[in-house]
Image 1: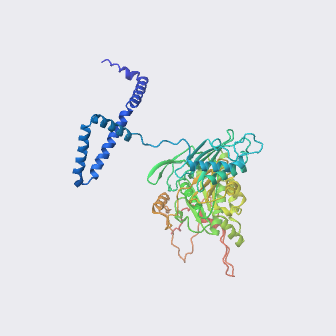
Image 2 (image 1 turned 90 degrees about the horizontal axis):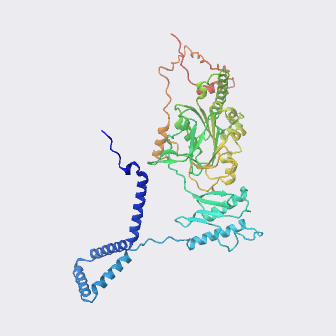
Amino acid sequence: MARRPLPRILSNGSAQLARSRELARTAADSATDVLHPLITITRGLRRLAAAGRRRWTETPKERRGALLFLVASVVLVVALVPYGPLLAAITLMAAAAWQGRDRSPAASDGPDESQSQRLKSLYEALVPYFSAAEDPEPLYSHGGAWDKAFPTYAFDGGGRISQLVVRYPAYFTDGEAEARARIEHLLAAKSGRGREYHFTWDEEGNQLTVGVLLPLPVDIAAQRFVTTPGETVLGFTDPTRVQRTLPLIQGEKQRDVPPVVWRTGLRSTEPHLLALGQPGSGTSTLLRSIALQALQYGDVVIVDGGGTGEYACLTGRDGVLAVEAGLAGVTASLEWAATETERRLIAANQAHQAGDPPPDDTKRPLWILLDRPTAFTHLATADGRKDPQALLQVPLRHGRPANVTVVVADQLDSLDALSEPVRQHTRARVVLGPATAEQLESVLGAPPHTTPIDELPPGRGYARLGNGPVHRLQVPATPNPYDDATPDALCEAVLDLLPPRTTPADGETIPEQDQSEGEPERVPAEGEPESAPVAPEASSGSEPEATPALAKEPLQNPGPVLTKEK
């Protein structure tokens, strides 16, 4: 059976269809222009009919008879007067045309009086910074025209400036950070405090663009983010310099939000992180968020210098090797971490020399999270012991090839108390809470492109990864689920992300101790160093110090329990 050819409009109809749509659109626009008076009169008649119906409904029933008699009398008089019906029709059409006119307010071509006064005051404030006595045609002068200096402007509903383009003379030193900071501070103060402004300097065009940034979302709870192994979401930022978005749930809706992603691992240029902030700024929240993400692919050691139980929900979970809050436990944990880093380096080096891939136990990431380690510095100094921060030198220097990542969080006032290796090897930086521009620049290494404000929600701050740009940051809400003041929805979100409790292996039992037989002899596992013998207690009754082998034992993987053969 032969095929029937397609209609010509379908075979080569793409151009014809487009041309037909354009002709139909043009005809509709022309008909609208021609019939515009009729459309206006029809709209007016409908409005007049609606007004008459509304007046009839509002009239009381006892007065409707009199109203009907009055209308009938008017109609009779108009009918009897010469040319009365024609004059009545003309009057009705004129009233309908008046009622059917477009009542939308006309767009204003320029700012109103209050807006003009605000722009003029801003112009006068910039005169001392953008004027020079040698300039023959100054762009900024007292009493000058502000419309040449501000070609583009916009205002919000409250009458404050929301966007502004500022032209400045070519001799202004826009390459100096101090000169820029003065202008940015002045514009932020004159445009309205309590908001964050983003400044974009165009040195080639001698223009400065000022924009008001919207507040970052604070209701994004902890959840599983769509990331690959080695990527950690520190928080969320503005879409100005981030080309990536993550799908997540905000409240009851799903949306895409630009994240600040920190990459760790063998090829990372920022393998370690330092987070600083004021008390209550959200540094512990950031550590909990990082811990929940790290437990998907690796192991975690947590050091709690605050001693408030902020990480009690992670105790005894799969992948959590230790949660230490005492000086002895912290020292033992960090000693084990340094030894484990060296062991991984040696094992990986031997595999490379033999031409083999690295062992599997060196590929699993190990995270060392420290909250306020400077608190243990004072305790160690008072007790005459070694500073625990000194034990971080090996993981910080050699942690990247060994898949060991160190995250340190402390208060902003304790920056000088941090050790030199911590400040030198933590190239990823986060500052949370209120901070001055000088503090942000000293910690991040570069000033932010926004104006810092005094009041910030918890978890709000700035982040910079290596030599990259400074981003605004909002940490996802990851509170302590055991805190009674935490909302139930946030508690459930954190509890759902926690790994299960650590359970002993099948068939593994703890033998009962018989005092008559004495303690069973423990045989060390393969590759485990034998513990040093414990010296007998002194006769003076003083407590002996715990040996390093006994202090490290809780961090080692428990092997099979050996029992005596009967």
